[in-house]
Length: 341
Ligand SMILES: Cc1cc2nc3c(=O)[nH]c(=O)nc-3n(C[C@H](O)[C@H](O)[C@H](O)COP(=O)(O)OP(=O)(O)OC[C@H]3O[C@@H](n4cnc5c(N)ncnc54)[C@H](O)[C@@H]3O)c2cc1C
Image 1 (cartoon, rainbow, N blue to C red):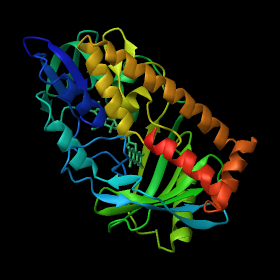
Image 2: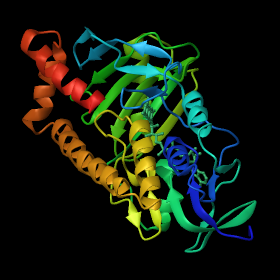
Image 3: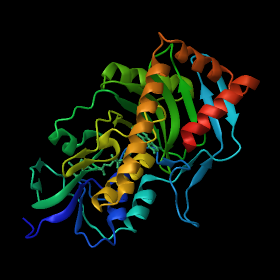
């Protein structure tokens, strides 16, 4: 074991963990980040950021998206927006940017395999802590150590990867084909494209096969030889503070289930927890705001994805012709609230 316990051990060097480390920087606390991968930027993700993620002037946010192709079970429409709603920054770029602002020690290839009330263990060592931050994503070992399940709401994304940059941002709302799911064509960082589906619930091989077939038919491609990926998202928020153990980002269930945007919420919760550890009341206020917003996101998600309720079909009606006069007003209001809110 390192002779002295660290003031803060953060498990996971994703946006949540690195944001926490960054906001602890300059405080004089000894902070250690343990990351299971050998480098940053490996998380399966589209790598897109919204206006919620602030970057300094001159920072290259990547490709700006000002058009969205909106599909339903029967229609497809292009919606042109007045300003970029997302930028494809890329995971590696954003994580390296955040790491460069932190004075924490970051150790790579150190998966945390054991957690006790005083220390964590990896195959390379044992590290004592005063505060432990679980920023280890949707399969969080810290969350498991706390005995918290991830079931309401969690889901899976399954897609095929095209080895070329994404040229169209497409979202397909599919209440008839597969209720509670949506189809997508999105970037995979700056150089690749992913086409597939996301659904609520556990991983299912039948649904994965359906997603592959849907992508092949919708985008007119042979998916049989394409590389595929599956990834879980966790929106099951059950609290963030458990004594001297804290959960941020997907580990805490902060993913927005409506948009599957998660990096901004991971960064915000990382900041909130860091400020709380530093004794700043602002930290608790940030976490309360996030928890309150999350509860509404979950309520809306439950209303919209239930095909037995009228909300699901109201959304379908808007998305069937999102450029129609009244529908466009509704579309813009909901869309920009989700993106900017
Ligand atoms: C297909 C898909 C596309 C998405 N696209 C977007 C998008 O474009 N924009 C967006 O904002 N959100 C997107 N999301 C959601 C987003 O990826 C997550 O919400 C976000 O990455 C959460 O950040 P995090 O820091 O909490 O966790 P993660 O990014 O998952 O980071 C956790 C880190 O912990 C490490 N780790 C895990 N276990 C251990 C362990 N035991 N020991 C040490 N380290 C460990 C992991 O290697 C990882 O580096 C997408 C999700 C999916 C599934």
